Image (cartoon, rainbow, N blue to C red; front, top):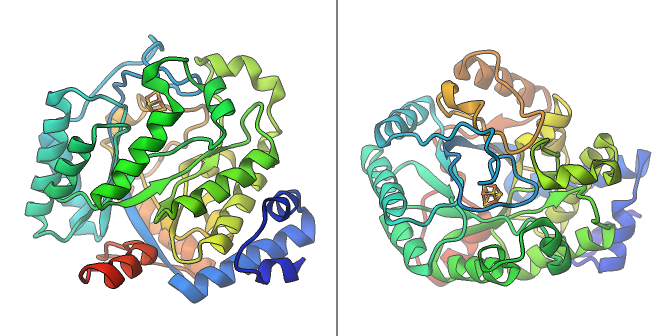
Length: 365
Ligand code: SF4
């Protein structure tokens, strides 16, 4: 098996076969991916303080807990001042970057609000804080405006690269079009962001062939970063009706870890997040992902009173201690697996930095 892993490109058939590894061979895969990561990005883990800006969303994705049809959700939006307080505190604590995530809204009020948040965050930190946005599909003009105000990265998950499966996960209308989503990713690339995407792993109707295609999609799209994790059902969603068809939860965790390892092998220098959904399945899920090739963590720094209203799936982990104590414990657990946090550094994608260096100008780390 290790001979296959030495190749710089894996075929779809090889990926499918690697996705079914178990036991010792699965451990060999993780360890090989960890070595690839060490050679490329070292054992530093980059932080993105996650700010769940708003659970208002105009979309109705069949798997998502904050879809507009879910009337059980108490809707909220953080104010500009609340966000600025969180960003300031994160910056002082050494978070080199924050990630602002929100349901999808395209009104002028919303896009103006993001714009001001981005430019004020940069101004308050003398341009030092890195900003990732994850606010869904927007017009190219809006993407450009936010980029020009200082946003560095954009995460727009394709969720699945299978158009047929995408169609089973979303309403069939113009707002939920697979083609439009791919076009939005292309707009982001054109605008100049570090572009991230990702998929859900272990969905009903999903095959290992589809997952292999997901990895090849990311490779072909030449992404700079990835946030992917296990699909976890949410009770108040249409997809919950298919829960009997899901792989067992532990299988979804192990598939997700193998996906991370394979992506690291396919794209050695990109940033790969150890997502919270992994931790929702197993307490040490994020550390397992770090050991399988991930190099980014996104601790939740949203004001605590809002966190229970941003529930995309069941089992969302709840922080029992203060954010500072949670970060200290995380640091300790990372040290135990020979990794350290890259405080006060943006942690930009090495892949993107190489691209910029070769094509334009130097970028701060
Ligand atoms: S997945 Fe995103 S776009 Fe879809 S309903 Fe949830 S928050 Fe909205």
